[in-house]
Length: 276
Length: 299
Image 1: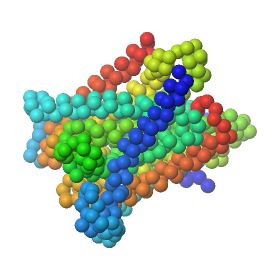
Image 2: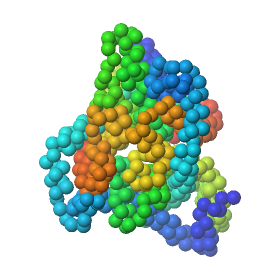
Image 3: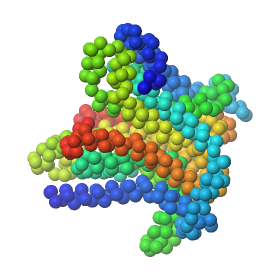
Image 4: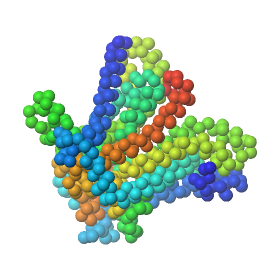
């Protein structure tokens, strides 16, 4: 029994490695192929090795993509900020069982479950009925809807770890509601708010399905889609893809590494049962 | 230091504690309004427009059932719907069969909490990258001259490149399973993580076999996570169109792709009707899944 269990666990370790290969393999292949020589195509074999497509990306494509990149970053920053702000409000209201918070929860769930193409279609039709120009606001609207559930989950997790006695004692010592919030609560949950914002930023940065019908001004993913479906694709696309993946991984690392280390410190490096 | 994030709260709330709740209600109306304008109304608009009369450049506000009639009597649309449903079901089942063991490994086998979180995040990270890029990255893997075909050829498993690896329903389903796998792993991982190791130890001490622990303890306790994961993957793959377009080439279809095509030809009411049918079928599937989850709790 015991030994069989150990063999099974070892097998699962191998299995997990294979799954990681399944998840990362395509990305790695893409990254390798982006270093093709000038004659290289979209698949193996490699025809020479070099930075040809990367230089092409930065010298030729960059000017073409510049506007889209700036627009994407702007929307992503706004989405992160708004989603973080909203998630704080909703999470706090939910924790205090304020009226209205019970109505918000199903809506947040709906935001998570609504297929992107449906939301995009609805948004474009709704703007058409209102005679509004499709553009920035509509795009920001659906991006926040997409990012909000994730930001909310982050905030709920943060507030669950937040000790309500801290808040109570501040109030008992005579601090006003606002003072308690700004001087006690906010400094403690600040990292959580930041990760909610970064979550939103990353999701917006890469969002495609909701955006495609909503705006006529291309964001980076929309530009990519146009390149993929209309133009003949070349390995500089792989370079672009590799670059965005790298940027995303840096953000994810920034998001999670402090959390993991914090978790580790709090537990004093011991390995107790996995209770959160 | 941080007074800029909620500036409107300061003057109202600093005076009296009683007004605290009023401030929160006011603040709460912002996300409520946002979700109303950018989520609820758009979804309702789709439903409404699906009953409008199509015109050459858009729609006329005249009630009609023709959009639905045309779609439901069209053979191609029906087979598209069936194909979408089949792809979603296959993807859901495959991600469960594959993902459960990943969650099991992370939650129950990896002993060290730090390693567990680190591995989970490593598995989670690709989810944050661009969906399109990950779909594109399948092309050099699965194509005629792709990595997989070259490997199969050089190992002598096949004598010719396999064409069904790219631009086929099969390819779409494999890619979708990869793209959505994390939505299955995460909730199962979280529900397995809440299980007390003592429970498993007790079962083991009482002489329970490995499979009866799995069947009678782990699966029932993980059921909420499994249901949530299944709902996620099912809904996402029902609405998918980018994977179908990029990986399927012209050889695979989905309702999402039809919607996009309708919009390209300015056929908005038809697009809205197709979307409404898609939502109806998706909601039915979700209700069935949730009911299955609830039955498990009663037993």
